[in-house]
Every structure is written in structure tokens, then in C-alpha cells.
Length: 262
Length: 229
Image (cartoon, rainbow over all chains, first blue to last red; front, side, top):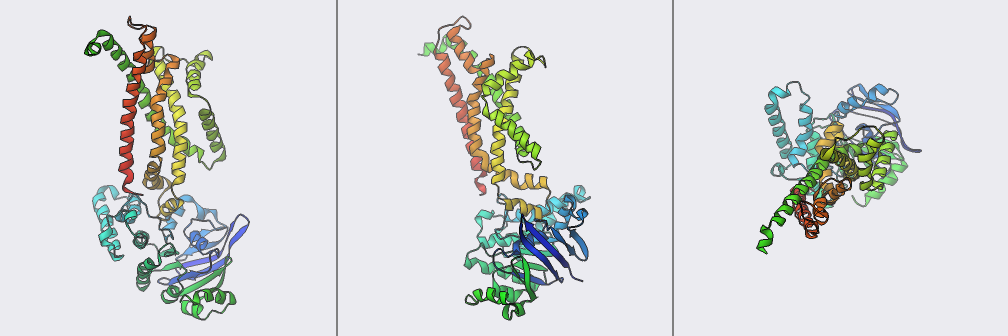
């Protein structure tokens, strides 16, 4: 069974249709790259999955449970949306780290707040918080940032900030980790360290959806690729196949612009 | 010179000015204590997605900011009695209460606009990052937005608070005996002293010293918040 099933998603901004009949599924442990030019709807699609935008039509199911159905308001209640969001992790293009907290606190804050809802929080407060802290430190160490735990975001390079953001998303153990152009805001010499982290996550079979402009990376790291244009899925399939031997003319045109770079 | 500072006249004037300045300080602190939180409530009203509430709030803010504080003090103090709605407690405490209520409402409206600017100045991505991490709206506000907002509003708030130090003198319009009223009283006659001009100008020393202290404290707060960008 697929971990994620997206069915017939449609989204309008005013009278502009930004997503149309988007359907795809994703297996556990697989990574999916979404490619396409700016304005093709890639980011909006990710934002729909994270409940930052509300699709006008369609449904989203995780592990077979429908968590969003545009025709069923019961799936859209604010209180439940908050919990459902936790199926997805999100890494933003512009990091969006919390500037007033250290790298470690950025990673642990949400988990600390969530743990307050646990019935045993009052009794085991210290143990729970210590555990969250230790887990946060381990995550940052995994990102190669063990020495940077107590640095504030403004004291970190872009690449380091984005790695903190990845650790922050991982801390809540999402079923599916989403990346919205994770290297687009970085200087070229800093993209490598972030891509390396994502690559190792893929090797550890983390289920991921990555919106990216890095074609070589998509080809080498992703299992599946979706090419979007004008709000629709033009082509989807195994990553290497779509990027090296696209079937559709529009995909070919799009990829040809990257041919020189690669 | 030394004789002057030790003279009975100087001691009498100083005692009177001190008691006047105590009133000034009371207005100042009561206004801050009331207007700082009330302003936040008003700012939420002016940003509400519920249109009637937003409209009403913005109209009130417009009316309060668009009319003189002096007028508001006079109206608040006299109109309820004239209209027989209620009467303020008699004497100095009634005047002080009325003045503080007027100041709190007035300053809360100014603060609300500063808060609104501060809140809306925090990038939307901050809120979204909190949302995708499963935080509630209030958690996002208190743990993420608030401190970033405070950092943004310290400089404009400093302006407003220093203005408040001096605006307290408007309380004299309903004969509240704050420091300027006291200073002036020695021209007209107070404690058997009259025709003295210097006490009025001497009040400036109080304002200067106090606004100096306030400036220093707010500068300290600004430096304290410099640890993040």
C-alpha cells in the first residue's frame, strides 16, 4: 500500500488555476522529485500537502487514511489539521528558522510544546525534556552540526541553516519529508553540503518529496520524478528514465535548458 | 548661592514639586501598565479576519488618534457627570482615575498600531514554520512571533513612551496637581509664596532626568535583544 495517495487535487488563486487534476502516489521509503519551471505549481502542491494551502478539490490519504477531502468539511477542522500536519515535514526554500532560538532549540521547540500534551508530562517533565534535548543534539550531529548546537541562525551559513531546518523537520518523525527548493536560496558552493544530507536521507530510505531545480541530483537521488507544467503533471516515472529519456515534448524542452549545465 | 538652596522658600517649592512629580509618575506607570496589554488586544482587533470587528476597532483608533488627548481628558472627566451616567470619586483620586483611563485608552490606540506594524513585520514564513511543526496559534504567537515583534517595536515604542513622560502634564487641564501645575502655582500663590517664576521652569529638570532614565532603560532593552537578527 502506498504511504501517500494524492487524488485529483485542484487549486485556484482567484480565477487563476494553479493546480489541475494532480494525482500521484508514493511508496514508503521512496523519494520523489518534482521538477518544472517557476510557476508550474510545484511549490503550491507541496503547500497543499502541508495544509498551508487548501485545495479546492481532491483528496489526500496517508497510509490509506483520508486526511483531507475537499468535499468533506469534517476533514478540514482546524484542531485536527494541526495533528494531520505532523504526517508531513517541511523544509522551506528560505529556511524559516526561528532567529531568537539556538540551532538546538529550533530543533527541539516543537517537540517540547507537543510533549506538554502528554498525560505524563507533569510527572516526567525532566526526563521527557532531557530525552528531547538529547535527540535534538543527535540529529544536529547527524547533520554535521554537533559543534553548532548553541549558535543562533544568524551565526550560521546558509548551508548550515538549511541543515538545521532539516533536523528540525526530522525531529517530529514525519511520515513524509517535503523539501521546497532546499538549495535555491544558497550560494552555489553551499548547495553541496545540503544535497549531501538529503542524499544520505534517501539512502536511509526516508520517504521524501523534493521540489528541485537540481536535475542531476533528482536523477541520481530520487526514485521517481514528476514533471509539472502549467499546474498539471505532464510526465511521471522512474527518475532516470524521465530525465534521460523524456517521452513528452514539453519535458524535453524543459530539460534541454539544463543540458548545458549538466 | 548655598543660602538659596537652604532657604525655606526653596525647600517649600521642592517639596511641592516632588509631590507633583509623584502624581506625574503615577500617571506614567498606570498608563503603561494599562495601555501596553490593552494595545495588544486592540491590535488583534484591528487585524481580525472578522470584518465588523476590524472595522469597529479601526474606527475607534482613528477617532482616538484623530482628536486631542486634552479633549479626551476633559470629556471623560466632565461628560459622565453632566449626562448623569456616573460620577468619578470626588477629589484628587477621582481626577487621577479619570486621567489614567483617558491616557490608557489614548496610548493603547497608538501602541496598537505599533504592535500591528511589529506583528505584520515578522515574515510570514515564521508562522508557517510553526504551523507545519504542529504548533497552535497561541504557541506560534507566544513562542515565535512575540519576541521578534518586541525587537521590532522597541525603537518606535521608545518614542511613544518618551512622549508619554511629557504628555502627563496635560492632566493639569482638569486641575490634577502634577508637577507643572505645582510649578505654576508659585506664580499665582501657594503656601504664601507668589510671583515666583523659576519653579515652573525648574520642572524641566524633572522631565529631563526622568526621560533620560527611560531612554537609558529602553536602550538597554534594545541591546539585550541584539542577540538575534
